[in-house]
Amino acid sequence: MIFPGPLIPARFLQRRQRFLAEAEFADGRREWVHVPNSGALTGCLTPGLEILLTRENRPGRKTAYTWRFCKGPAGWICIDTLAPNRLVAEALAGPGLPGLPPPIAVRPEVVLPQGSRLDFVLEYDQSPAVFVEVKSVTWVEEGVALFPDGVTSRGRRHLEHLEALAAQGFGAWQVFVVQREDARAFDAAATVDPAYARELARAARNGVQILVIQEKINPPEITLASCLPFDLIFLR
Image (cartoon, one colour):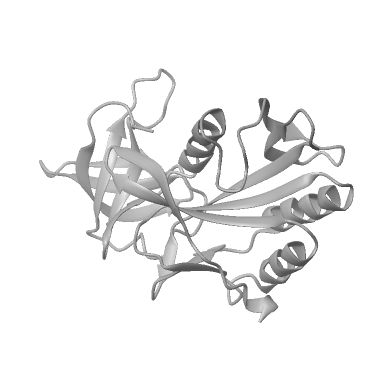
């Protein structure tokens, strides 16, 4: 996928709330910009960090710019949490994801009987449907991509629903998209959210397929690239 319009360089100054950050432009002016990520953005909030923005022309917006990328120690990081879903949707419409052949139909934003939503359901001719949940990963420590970067009861519920679907005979996949290129492996961030780490390990034991796939980032373009190994802490 390619972000529309030219990317505008700036410097990160501060984050005032989850969806608002202050940026300084090359000409010295400062503006509040939209942050398309509700997570903690661990490692991405150093004052003075180089960032890339897109200008938004939609009427009714409170901010004129959206923060898309920041410069990490080993290259660009895409912070937009909607990007992984778009990349996965593109893959499902084409060659499919690793281990998942192209489906005959894809339905996004599927509402479950419990009222929760999962990102996709894939339909096949001769096989049970496959439910897919996608998570964005932007945090890397010593080459290990970590999720979550904050406590996520919602993410834990998604895993519980995937487990229940697997028990009913459906396919159930948890896909983590690592939005940077300096990770060599993936693990659950048990120090941040031990309940999520335990649930992820339990889901993996109970039939939920785990896929970790890394992006190749060349702003304004990002693509899905290689799979990463994972070493879930509560499976050791």
